[in-house]
Amino acid sequence: MTLTASVDTTLTEIISGTTPGAACSPDLVAKPWVFDLQPPSYGPGSSMGDVIPAGSPRQGTLPAFYREASSEELDRRIRSAKETLGDRLVILGHFYQRDEVVAYADYVGDSFQLATAAKARTDAEAIVFCGVHFMAETADLLSTPEQSVILPNLAAGCSMADMANIDQVEECWEQLTELFGSEADATGRVPVIPVTYMNSSAALKGFCGRNGGIVCTSSNAETVLKWAFERGQRVLFFPDQHLGRNTAKAMGVPLEQMPMWNPNKPFGGNDALALQSSQVILWHGFCSVHKRFTVDQIERARAEHPGVRVIVHPECPMPVVDAADEYGSTDYIRKAIEAAPAGTTFAIGTEINLVQRLAAEHPEHTIFCLDPVVCPCSTMYRIHPGYLAWVLDSLLDGVVLNQISVSDDVAAPARLALERMLAAKPPIAAGA
Ligand code: SF4
Image (cartoon, rainbow, N blue to C red; front, side, top):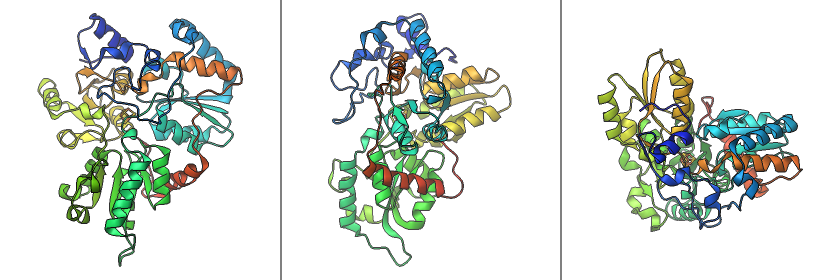
């Protein structure tokens, strides 16, 4: 099925029975504020039963006016606020954000592209980030102290980022230090270099900065791993096991030298020998959206569309990446589609909002999502135009709501880890 309407419209039609198809949860079409009032949950419609960890920021009740306003009223308010605030405001929309919000974005891109776009807009006093929490934190790290970064709905987290918290990583580090010590070998390489994916909290980026480590994106993971292997005997990679495994495997690291670290078990559930012979220790984290893609889906796409080009994101499990024709970041996928000759058929393994938008932007191709079940990133989906109108109206009143602010003690080492990434060679192409 090739879909070009917005995901929200498609979901509403599927759930009401007016369009054939399947959605991963009927809760997805509920308004997000229904979930603001309920016990901790990432709803609406989390595909893997994601749960907000204790201590995560929580969204309070959205004022009744914004819950009850029509889409026309919200549109009028958002456009009017944008016009009044002018260059004092910049709105960023992630590739996976719903179309009803992306429509107001000044920049659309992946998390790192958006953070660097924010950095370039020093004239903007307010950066409204329509993505998820770790993205807003990265924008805060890269923006000036005079700028405020705002996340319209504080419950827009990332289930993968939340699978590794700072206490667990510190404990893991203590155990690895106990096992390996901290002295460099004869070649000057230390026992372990920590590498965190961009999709992680600022606290973990800060941990990497403090411990000789670095940040990576899905575009530059191989460059970053090379950087780390020049400085360390092995890498501790968190939080996404799949990006770590797919990248290291492509670099020739044997699977048996990539043990998994389960933070709930002593030594991650490994024996000392497995850790001693390891090259990459993979954290037990994953993206609930990309984990849905399967080899069966690829085989079905090939059977139904002979000649189809299958491109998947490296957050997908290894068998899926192996079965695809190509894999790469959101930016890679976008550019591959732009560069293809007209009439190409693509089956894409990444978040549905981006796939449907690409299908709408490229009518010269046939583009569809590998997963026949419509299942967006449920956490990013929590940014509804109602929340956007609310934070913009508040800015007009001189009030900054839902500001994301990284403390100085975390920000300084986190910036260091980001700077190491930017300095790693070859030059970095954005993507996360
Ligand atoms: S798609 Fe996955 S990794 Fe990306 S924000 Fe959503 S849950 Fe996090």
